Amino acid sequence: MDAAWSVFLQVLERVSGPFLSFGSMVSLTSLGCALLIAVAFVAARLRRRRRRIRLKVVLRALFPRRMVAHASTGIDISYLIFNTFIFGAMFGWALLSFRTISNGTIDALTGTFGTPAATALPEFAVRALLTVVLFLAYEFGYWLHHYLCHRVPFLWEFHKVHHTANVLTPITVFRVHPVDTWLFVNMLAIAVGTANGVANYALGVTAHQYGLTETNLILVVFIHVYIHFQHSHLWIAFRGLTGRVLLSPAHHQVHHSTNPVHFNKNLGSCLAVWDWMFGTLHIPAKAPERLNFGVEPAGRDVQTISEAYLASFPRAAQTMRGAQPESGMGRRLPGEQLPEPAVEPLGEMSLAPARQA
Image (cartoon, rainbow, N blue to C red; front, side):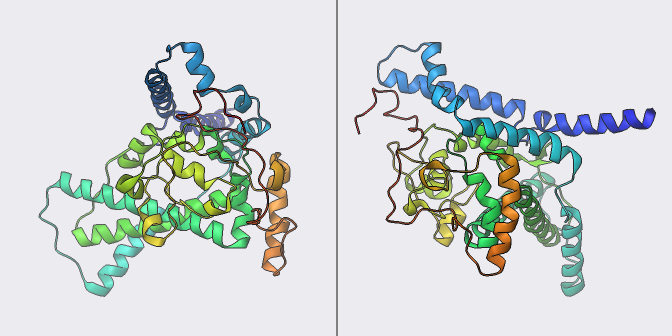
């Protein structure tokens, strides 16, 4: 009886963990911050257009019926439940250990170059420097994983599950294949673990980053400020130098676009610097763009978990044999006509009467 109760408590801790962790994409604090910022964003738009700010209007703008009632939103909820409460609670994602890689890197460097002298920097400076280094390493690991998933046909068959969303909501982030997630967390372990080992060796001391619930403090800030809007209809575009350093919500919405001009662009998470450096950056327009989302023509995307998850394996196997899956890479040909966008972005034009086609 005690053993069963202990197992129940462990499962309950895993299930509730994402909501209580500051670094989680579904933490109560980050979702609350996102809601407050979104309300302020819509209210500011209404004020600029000299329209009365009413709660009903704000809520209708933030939660349009065409998105809430869309089949794609319903399946996003299923992905959230499966990946967070079922698969995530039953299995661990990481095969490679961040600590093992970090310690292995330190041992390798020490064996090659000898023991370094300890830095004279104060502890707060060392930890702050390490926090920046590990955040940059996280961003690079994210970009590299994303780049490979878009460029390698075998990996794309798993990653494109995320791109089957026909409308974007904050919970679309959970529309992912377990194989894609497994590859992601292990690649991050390599990138961040190696960076941690190199940094600790260079500093000559054992240091820890500043973080909340074991999540890098800089990443926690981004999650609470605007990460949730990247999968949304709020058109917040960073341009100029800012748009080359920071990946705005509009950057990522463009990434999901079915327009061939946008394919394989904006692969970062919070920063645009790696995209800028490696030529995969596409800066969005200041005015809201009319975008269509998905991977299949006319929105015929798979909208069931079982079919999406199971079909990815034989399709990926086809690519290993050199064959092309039935719908190819799930991207439109440049000359193919696109359907009308599923959702018009919420920005300057979305609060005005709808335009005629």
